[in-house]
Image (tube, rainbow, N blue to C red; front, side):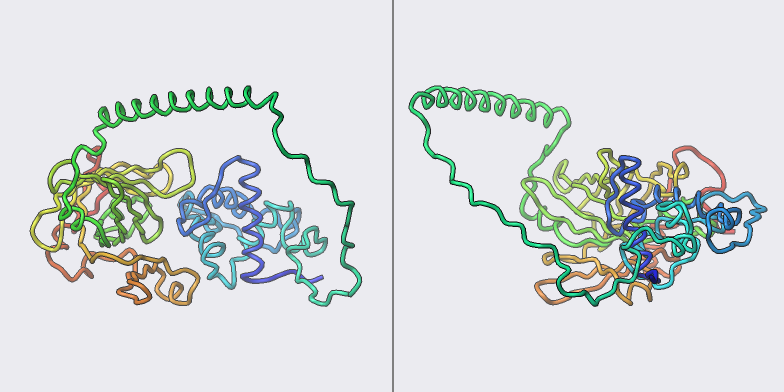
Length: 399
């Protein structure tokens, strides 16, 4: 029997790894283009992969050279570390035709306790074998038939009609009481939390609803990246009006946000969002204030945000971001699993009106010097970030 190889093999392995991880830990993983959703699985596999130089004889996999790690690097900078981004590209985007051998061996060991060579010598899962398309006739299971059961009797006895009616009326009164109680509770919550304090005009709705391009310099605060000086990234927001407030999806280069906006006063908008995931808790919440009637195409926004770094390095920051309205109407779609993704090494968002593509956005980290506008450069440099506690060496300065 022959094992699957390449893209087909790694997609099958990671599908089973994610399912087993959920079963063993009780955590649920959202399978989308957000690399952060796969980080916990990547760390578990990395514990296996970094031990591969010592287990070739016992776990039956190919030999790996040692990683002496003279600088005592931590995850995800060790030689055999596996990242959430690698899992996302191999499993979700499916653009990895030749997966790294230590990723493949780590998956086999996590699932079956042996490496690929050991599994190939004694395969225990037919899903990883190349299937034989030639099926012999007559090997299909028989169709099981049984007697046709009579239809149940219908109708309600008069003896139970009135008691059932009284029970239903009582239930209706109870539901009405609970509904009124819930309505009063929501009114109290809305007042205490100042939800929807101002109803926007149609002009304000038209100004906020639509497609926005947001520029942010938050990568400059990621200490895990030694090349973070003057790095900026663009995001796309799809803002839609809904019963007095606005909801939006925010597409980033590596992960996405979801959130809502509301007008606090004429032309003053508050923005709240968090990392898109499937957890019961909110991850990295963000709060922003926008003055919508400011002049010029660029609208500076002040945000309480995060550095969006790995693990404990993810720190709260204050930051100036810049919004630029692109237009209204239509829909946005993320492009995945194409040669264009692999070529640009970025996230691609297409904006459509009907079947006509209006514009494509290529979301990636880039240098501030590549931004064409001098106004944007001044708004997004190292002075746009405020640390929660002053500390040297976090925001790199011009030498």
